[in-house]
Length: 334
Ligand code: HEC
Ligand code: HEC
Image 1 (cartoon, protein in one colour):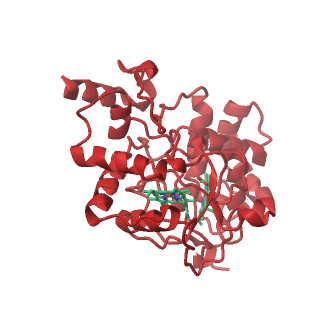
Image 2 (cartoon, rainbow, N blue to C red; image 1 turned 120 degrees about the horizontal axis):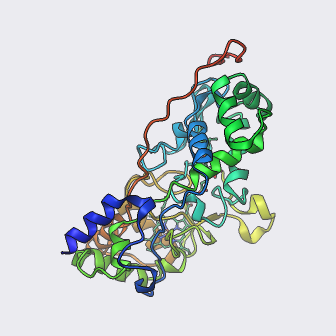
């Protein structure tokens, strides 16, 4: 019976999930289930999806949002730091775009308040897509297939960068991952977790991980110091939140990352220095809580973390409209 229920819900898909186990029966826990996306403007989401996969928003004509936030790989690139224009070594680990709409702000230091504000950044970042907003708009305006889509969504052929970033953000808002096994447990299913996974969650709560990793995203609700009990050793020059607030107290404070789908988004931490979850959990225990876990305890917490892998967005690869005769040509090797 339980299996039937789950498979029916999974088949019904993330968008349709309303569930026999409604919001009223959610357990009272510091982590809440991820709600499925509600698509109110499907044409805008489809446009944003094309733009997310659009390499012509980069100078090289080769790098898209999906290059570093690969939706086949949990919305990340699985590299310590990203590769940008001209094979430049990026400064920091690329966080996942999955469920990023649930975070209190965007980027490790939270310097963008919204997804729309964030989306303008990489296009004109010389180390990422190395383009300009003007050129990105010029490229789109020269592609007849895009002009048609912008007319459909915005009622005008005068494309501007705010339309581009708004559409991308609308697509990103659909990139949520509901119906993880942990979410079924949160909604009342007692049998869906193994004893080891449940023990891992109890330990995660009792030893204090939830103080920082809480809310539907198991993170993304606050900025916290990396290295509370013991300092974190890294060669990475990023200083975190102080870059935004200018307050010395915020030095080495980072947005607490979501632990949703964390099994897929290795390597871990802002410098990408931890390759495995075991390593990340061990470091968190010692540096944030002053606690050294046994191998068995670490294995339990890791088992719990893997139950946070949800249904990945089902993406059909978008077909992008071909360039027109006046479309500026890519410059991959300058
Ligand atoms: C060259 C690799 C690269 C490309 C291309 C890229 N990003 Fe990113 N993205 C990153 C890195 C690295 C960060 C973290 C930067 C930081 O925090 O300072 C990031 C951060 C983000 C975040 C914040 C997530 C969070 O939880 O803080 C979002 C959302 C995002 N990118 C979306 C996009 C979109 C949309 C595009 C395309 C317009 C894009 N990215 C293109 C590497 C890339
Ligand atoms: C005081 C707040 C705090 C506590 C307590 C805490 N964390 Fe974290 N956690 C963070 C911050 C901040 C980061 C990001 C640090 C960085 O990248 O430099 C992080 C990162 C992580 C990551 C890596 C995620 C990624 O995508 O890079 C994992 C896994 C993690 N924590 C698990 C745990 C576990 C398990 C516990 C309990 C043992 C725990 N955390 C306790 C604040 C906390």
